[in-house]
Image (cartoon, rainbow, N blue to C red; front, side, top):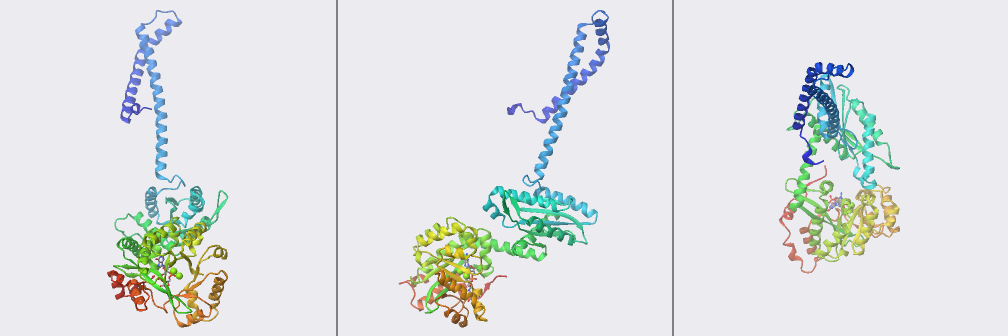
Length: 555
Ligand code: C2E
Ligand code: MG
Ligand code: MG
C-alpha cells in the first residue's frame, strides 16, 4: 500500500465520528419518515391505494441504505478493534519475553521481580534471586554450531520451567545467562538451596540435541532480600539483588565452575579488586608497564648456561611488581593477552640479541594465543622484523592447548618447526595429554612441572614419577627440562637420571634484562660489542632492581 493511503488515528477517528453521525441521523429520519411513508407504501402495494410521494419514498430508501452502511461500518470497526488488540498483545509479549526461550527478558524481569517482591513482602515472605550462567557455552557453540547452541538454551529454559515451582519467575538475561526469582519462607532459606541443587541434576543431565549428546554445567549465584537490602549507590533494590547474585555467580566461576555460592559482602571487594586489575592491565599494556624477566636454563651435566626463559612481570604503578599467575589469566579473559605477549616477545628478541648467539630464548605462549589461526605467521613475522634467528627461539605451550583444537595446534607447530623454532611442552604432568598426542605431536622437549621436581627432596617414592617421565622422554626421543630446582639434593637426584636441562632458584631468581646483561658481561657471554645496548635499558628496570623481592603474588 502507498504510504499516503495510510490514515492516522485522528483521521480514522474523525471518519468514524462522521459515520456515526450519519447513521444516527439516518435512524432518526427513518423513524420520522418511515412511520408515515411505510404504511402508505404497504397500502399502495397490497390494497392498490394511490402511490405515496416519490420524494418521501426516495428519502426512505436512502435512509435504509445509510442504516445498512452504518451497520457494516460498525462490524468493520469491531473486527478492527479486536485485531488491533491482538496485535498489541503480541507486541507486548515480544517486548516482555525472550523470543528463543519464551522466558522473560532482562527488562521485564526487573519489573516483574519488583511486583513479586511487593506481594511477597505483604505476605511476610522473602524473595531469592538466582543468577545462572552456563559454563563453557562458547565451546558448545564453536564445536556443534549455533543451531545446537540455540537448542541447548531452549532445553535449559524448559528444564528450568519443569523443575521450579509455578510462582517462580524465569528469565533469560542474554547469551547463556538465565535468572530466576523464587518466593520462600524467610525462616527456611534451605529450600532455596534444595531448588538450586536439584537444578544441577536436571539441567546437568546430558541433552540429546539432534543425536549429539551435550553436557551442560553451570555456575550459580544466589542472594535474597530476607535480611533487607541496604542502599547501594545508584541502584534500585531489584538491581542490587541482581548485582549481588551476579557477584556470587562470578565467584562460582572463579572457584572452578559447576557450583553455586550465596552472595557475601566480601565478594564485592574481591570483584572491585578484579575490576581494578582489569583496568590496570588494559592501561598497563598500552603504557608499556609489562616487562620481561629472564630465568637461566642450565645443562645439568656440565653446569653451563644454555639459555633463558622469558617470564612476564607487571610493573604496576599502584601494586608494585605483579606475578604472571595473577595477570595472565585476567589478560586472557579480557582479550589483551596477545598484545601483551607480542610486545614482551619483541622486547625479549631485542634483549637476547645482545647475548651470546649460542644462548636460546624460551617464551611462554598462552592457549588463547594458540586459538588464533594466524599465530604462527605472526610469530614468524616478529622474528623476521626483529631479525632474530628462529633457531634460537623455543616456545613453551601447555597441555591445555592440546584439548582445544589438536589439528590446528599440530599444523601451527609444524609450520613453526619448519622455520627452525623449537617447541616445548611446559608443565608436563599437570594436564591430560595422552601418549597418543605426545607421539603424534612433534615436540622438541618436555618440561617436567616443578611440583614433581620439588618432591625429589623428600622420600624416593615420589622420584618414581620423575623417573617415569624421564624414561617416557627417552622413549619418545624428547629431551627433558626439569623446572624448579631449588637445592643441591634435587640437582643431585636429577643428575643421576641422565642428560637433562634444568632451571630453578638454585641457579638464581628470574632477573631483569639489565641484570642478565651484567651477568653475561662478567662471564664474557655477550654478543660482540653489545655492552653499548645496556645503557638503553629503561628506568622501569632500575626501579625493579631496587626492590626485587617486592612482588604481588597470587592471593
Ligand atoms: P612456567 O612457564 O612454568 O615458569 C616457571 C615458573 O616457575 C616461573 O614463575 C618461575 O619464576 C618459577 N620458578 C622458577 N624456578 C623456581 C623454583 O626453583 N622454585 C619455585 N617455587 N618456582 C620457580 P612465574 O614467573 O611466576 O611464572 C608463572 C607462570 O606464568 C609461568 O610458568 C608461565 O606459565 C606463566 N607465564 C609467565 N610469563 C608468561 C608470558 O609471557 N606469557 C604467558 N602466556 N604465560 C606466562
Ligand atoms: Mg614456561
Ligand atoms: Mg612450567
